[in-house]
Image (cartoon, rainbow over all chains, first blue to last red; front, side, top):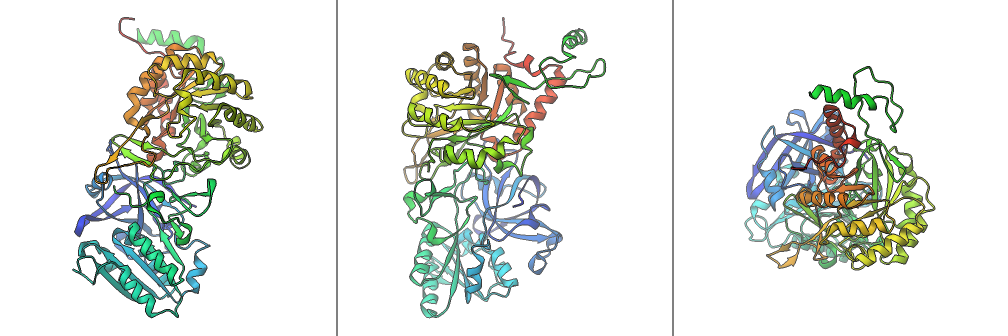
Length: 294
Length: 335
């Protein structure tokens, strides 16, 4: 697996509503090697108090000059790596201040994404792929959705947030999926309530279909999604998040509890993940380290 | 004056003594020596990676040239595999981080079969960090590891702050330190380094005890016990509640302890604690460390140790000094 550790330049750090940012990095070595669902470790340089790189899903990769990756993904001209993030703590607050031309430490691409060998066959068996995203979790799902669109998969996005401002990146999804079902807790956009409600309705209506669920978001949303997948007997891939020290499997700081005993009881989100089969994970907030702020 | 003293210094060294074969330099050119020797083992340079921050070496092989390192200290190995602590296990602090991993590792047997063959081929030496919960298990772990070929030394971890018994319990009790070091030394086929805990009142005391019990060298410091709290939920940031603090924030305290330990013993001392650049490493060496270990910096800048190797080289060249001349060369006022 090719990964590159380099100091790279910020091309643009575009502010979006709700404290979100779309950070575009000039990364000619990293961008062409990204597989859907992989992540980057990134750090704004020049701050000695904020040390650790932050793990972030790779939202998109593009060709020089802002051309869409789309059907040209294989072209070597891919050189822009995009990260979509939200200010949640001091690491992301520092990153929000990044300006065009600033330098960042970038280690990417990392991790086990959505289309690794053991996952792909299940996608082919499905009638439709259902993406389920909560808030900034959307960042993990665009690249897989694009790749599936290229292969003419039928796809649907279920996307929930607390408010309208949490529903970032929907413009990028529009050309890729056949339908989008949005939900906000205050009802300002789409369904009022949790995104798992329209998901449940959809699964109830189509019990004869085979779905593959791909989910990323807050732990409560993931747990509810996984419950639905289990109840309706559909395979479900989840992209997990955790604090990380290194991103390459040595610090063991991001380990989460998985099915298994003894020394097989934990797996690293950075290396064995971030994408896991949902039934591999022990969904207990106490022991899984989920629901971390900052 | 400066020129004269440099010339004088140069004369006896230009033929090189213990170092590797060096082509005869042109007259007047100074070739600094970086190779070091500890307990009869030669290391090509004094820059090592610290246990727990560098896996089993291979993980970083795509990112840096491992052959440029002096040594790799592998993740603490216990007799049997260990699963570690429940998450959350890490938390960033100002200029540092807390961790309570709980020594998740593959165990001695799998280390020998799966990890050591790769490490053995490197120019960097392999130092195996050894951990257990009892003196018998420390000895058992070493006996298992003795079967392995190509281990440069053991680093006895009597200072892990994140496991319920063992670890720091040994490193903060003079009697237990003496007992476990003596037993480990007796069992060890390879030289024995002892990694000391900074969570003691008098580091010189523990340094002397370890030396007296047979340690071939000391490495210090392991992490400082600390903690952090999420005030919104009133829960600890780390599931273990307390955790080990590392990173640049601890460097001044670690440096002071290395200085004190190096003055207390005759055996070599290896300096660890917040080293993030050449200048940090040089400070430890000048304070008395014969080698240094880079830890937390590996996480956020994997190229740090290689940059330090180059930085020390540049410094020695500029100062016209061999590394050995630097060790413990601190000039204290009035002395």
